[in-house]
Amino acid sequence: MTQISNKTIVTTRDVSPTTALFLLLSSTCMSNVHPFQTDDAGLVPIKEKVLSRVRLDEQDALTLYRTGDILAVGWLANYVRERMHGDKAYFNVNRHINPTNVCVAACRLCAFGRKKDTPGAYTMALEEAFETAASGYTEAVTEFHIVGGLHPDLPFQYFLELCSGLKQRFPQVHLKAFTMVEVAYLAKRAKLSIRETLEQLKASGVDSLPGGGAEIFADRVRHIICDHKIDGDQWLDTAKLAHQIGLKSNATMLYGHVENDEDRVDHLLKLRALQDETHGFQTFIPLAFHPDNTPLQHLPKTTGMLDIKQIAVSRLVLDNFPHIKAYWQMMTAKIAQIALRFGADDIDGTVIEEKIYHDAGATTPQGMRRQELVRLITEAGREPIERDTFYRPVTRTETSVTIAV
Figure 1 (cartoon, rainbow, N blue to C red):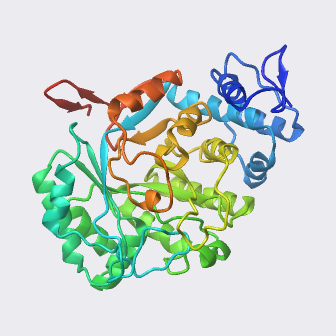
Figure 2 (figure 1 turned 90 degrees about the vertical axis):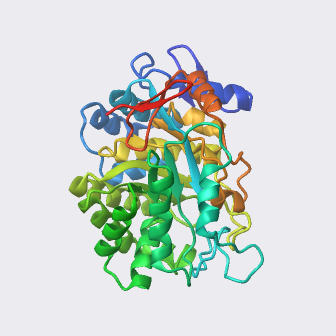
Figure 3 (figure 1 turned 120 degrees about the vertical axis):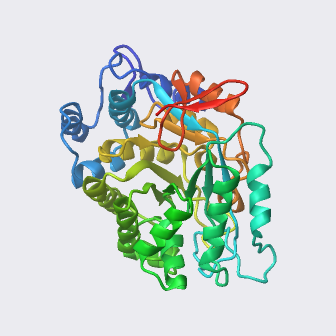
């Protein structure tokens, strides 16, 4: 039971799912209009910390995960979100490029990777990758998001030429390319240090790194879902080196599989500690696990309540992360829209032809037009702000694109 206003008390049994969703949204619309209410006494000291800008600790984070009062958690997350960003909600016009799905790893979480010479395996020739970048959209993109499998045969030079070729053809487009896992694998293949690998990628045109491959840092979980990848400490070390040479990155967490609340909190606190040190993370993106077509397909999919709670807890714990993204491809556009009232300030972008999560059963569209993203944000009562990768506002006319500097 949660008090929505001074006069209305509802339970999920009293209303239809649609009405309940509306009440969830409206209850957190403006933190300074709706007073904080909760039946959970454990949330009261957390509220006092949040309002006083006192950092939450491990026990606070566990309390947030375990409470049943999602509206109170949402109120707090929305309070922080509006304190940081007001009504602004960000999106960008981007395109995903997955140059290969051939992968030496056999992660139980993955439906994307293939062994070479097996049905469905592909590797783009460089010219094919350049054609993919140039096709399939009518609006000028500001970002190419480039990730793929850990290919056993492609030389490091292929990836350097991929980036330099894209930069030559699309000099105005930001290259957000290669996860920490890919960087570490390329370094091993090329017999280079991680730093040397990052420096060569940067020189070839890489502007920043995506946050994938983090999954869950806890060794127990990692051994079950992705034991062929680098471990959590190596992921963090690679991100640290990227930040040290001036490459910003994102960070992710894959949730909703075999992890528990303690694992999630451990993951968030390790990211927060590294951000204290480097200030190199731009955005945190919680990724809902899609079990279809994976060796873990017996697991249930995440619920809307978990998706919303994960966004809210992330905003409250990661106090030094500028942005929290509700990735509509993973959690559906409708849940991502509501997440803009539960701590998220970013809804991602147009994407265009996303493969990795759709291979795992995502039923969302593979791309979304700019106008639809604007509509989703506007109908959530937020102000849509088109951005580039560094969150600089983008201004469009019929003939030009201008990025604020």
